[in-house]
Length: 258
Length: 283
Image 1: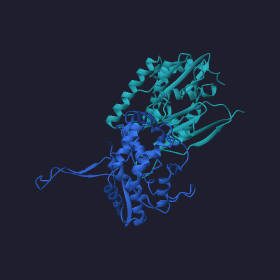
Image 2: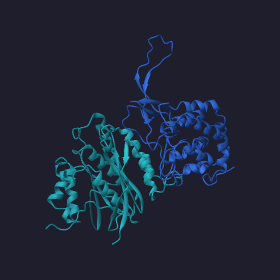
Image 3: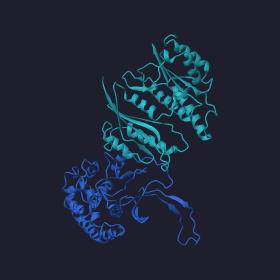
């Protein structure tokens, strides 16, 4: 699985006599995201998505939360090495075609994951958004800031926070407020492959979802305590009804069959 | 007058994201005939990672001019293709927003590409042309005779694209003469900036493949190739070896394509005398 690269900054030494095994010091590069008025839940959304994605076994960019200069950040690990000034391209259309053909289960996983966390802006076309094809041909998912509590979008009358959770809970269509065809969703074609991920999501324990929401830094507010509880309930309930919502939605998943 | 619309974007390479000084490296043009890319093939600078640059070059060539058929790539005739391509560029290679241009007469996509490339990317400075080269070298001698004998004003064409019988663009030689017989002249000149010499090498290689593949036009292809001298370029040993190898490989390609290599001033003198018969008389 393609993860970020690391720069060794210290030769492996252990003056204590190797009791803790060989070790070395590395640096890695992170992209920081923070909250702003139109995106008041950025840090919360990113945090919960990275944790759930990782728990499901998907190649999600590893992330941490921290305060820098008194401001809370979600820090998502970036692919290039810290010292790399020049970075090569990611895989083109041919690489994506091969990846999708060779990794149908994984692609179904990414889509079901996005539907579970109500993340609506990943895609291949017309723009490649929030997914990358690494040089080794593997998939890499990043930037889930539009999931769960979402963001305020006046043009689409989207209100971030609990109203968003309620609207996507009520109808999957609420997720597709950005308009236009997103070819990404059309790659959801096989119910058996989708079921693999629906099952996995259904098996996420309650305590794990509670822990994940608790890992959203307390320094960010919103989400308030009540909103955090609403998110836990949303994620718990969604584990069980999501499959029916998806299978009954022929508009957005026209190719999903047998 | 017929009007043709084109959309184009400039590609830039950023060697150091902290300095944010982009270098223009190529142009992509979209027209009714499809899409074309011209990229500086031999982009040699100390601050440019040759391996990274090569990967970008291959990637862009594949995306813009490679096999079209892919459900993961918008049609190259569509506006969406620009969104797609922009989303795949990033910190190291950036692409401008697509820009519009129109011509009032029919112009081949390739010509538009060449003109935009010359205007936006090419680092060649025509006004300094007379300062390039070394006396006694074929390219220098050809330039000297061209000026002395006023060949350019007598019908020796610059920036003239050669086309196949079907009208497909082949390449635009350094100079072209046509009067009963078609002469195409290219050059590989030393004692200029290495990137200019590399560009001429690149052009000669491209022309060699066109000459080899297209039999529908009869062209006498002359390539003036300066001798490679070790002191000609301010290059390190490794880069000099690369350049020398490129010279030799290109010579072989020209020969294989039945091109005539002129590497001696006497040969140049004989050739220009012959060429003059195709041109308008002096005076």
